[in-house]
Length: 355
Image 1 (tube, rainbow, N blue to C red):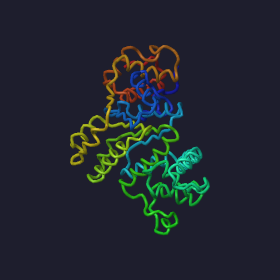
Image 2: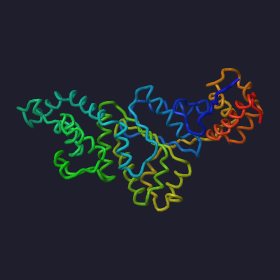
Image 3: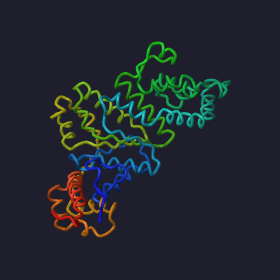
Image 4: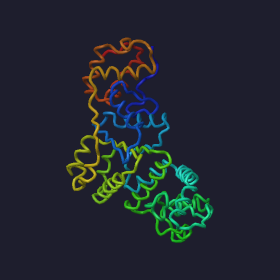
């Protein structure tokens, strides 16, 4: 009847299938958040839930929507070891070539306008478009851009020191000789500098593409950093949010306990409380346990991958009721239970499943 387990590979969230019979309202809310016109500042959603409640699954769904709608986005599986580490992984996910492509698009689009504006301001009436340095144009478009970053982008734009420029932006520590070749004063080596460069990168992308979505899973992992590291990360995240970059959308996931500990300075966040970030992490979306009806719909979604007939031919009503009770409506627990049940049923060739 069925020779393939629809719940394989339990308990890892599948990235090829997303099951949303259980949370239609959340699906709608996420879709609206992702596809709505960007606001004038940073927009945030924080997904809270217990272990196995579907937080990663929620981000996988958001990732799927972004891919289908061609929304610029990155998916980061955890905060990493520091904010500097997070910044390099975001930049690496965006890709250096894509950042350069956005730089080209902006400069090619704005050269004429920049020249006219410069002439209006009587900075140089005789200047030709070819005479405008890339660095100068970038600093005109983005008055607050980091000086070193403008120099890096300017050289890469003009096909000079491409590999060194890429290494600099990925926070590789560079020798004085390499820094001299790039004509920059320092490498990116601190959280403070990392948040500045990340903010400048996001502005570049959103200026050209209107928005960028950052999906960050397992925010509670910053509790495993040292006290100094966790506080530095929190301060950097708060600074990034406070940049209020138009078009930046953040969806963060965190365990309910982890968020409470972060807010109260308890557990793994003992001595690491930072209210300035906690206050900015709104709105909160709470993932609750599935009802019995939602549990049945959730299971039906999986089973339909391998069997198109009625669900009662695969699982009895009593079994479905038992699964809901034993799992307490936890999606991950449901998957674990069903995986074991289907493995035995397939091996014994015995359906519908009774328990």
